[in-house]
Image 1 (spheres, rainbow, N blue to C red):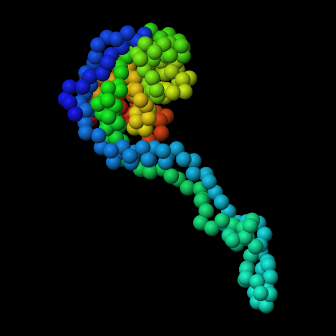
Image 2 (image 1 turned 90 degrees about the vertical axis):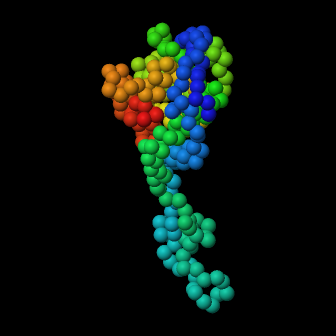
Image 3 (image 1 turned 180 degrees about the horizontal axis):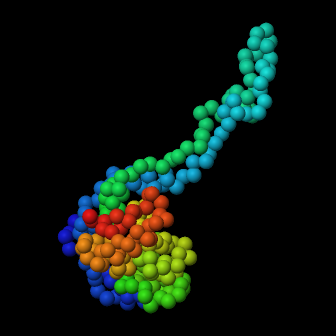
Length: 245
């Protein structure tokens, strides 16, 4: 992939302001398809409730008496009317409650997320909005107008910072949009979306502010707060501090 990567930059009302550079360590790597597949499979598996259950022949009520004599009647031998071959009998090898979750190491989740972002960046499907500070209250009309002004159609993933929750609330009523804060960004949603819209602050945080700086410490604390209630298959706080690290 090309070393020089850019994304279109817009204001909060959809006015174009040129381009912004993308970190090639995050948006320009060679995608690892196998890792993306494994991580997405694990994410979908973790969503399964696993509460399915069937009764075995031992759990079905009745059938304790042998239905007829073993020999002499010319019929097949049976020991219980609750055997699997009987109507109303138990189920052989049926599903039982289980946990479908799979363990995916942190480094694997990072690589999968960077691979997915690189795929979208290569197809020019990442767009950046300066900030949403002007959005004082949630308005779905503003979100729809922004998408129209940017010329965005199809499925959209919005990634914003936690203090930009007004924007998240404005977009979340649209059925073709997933709106997250940075701590909830994950591989499946990136691959699901046709276009990814990020605020400029989210982009800087995702690309990694220099460690040891006040900006890094403040942003890292913000991400830890955002991810406090996020499940195991979502990006961790350490991922969000700098996907490239």
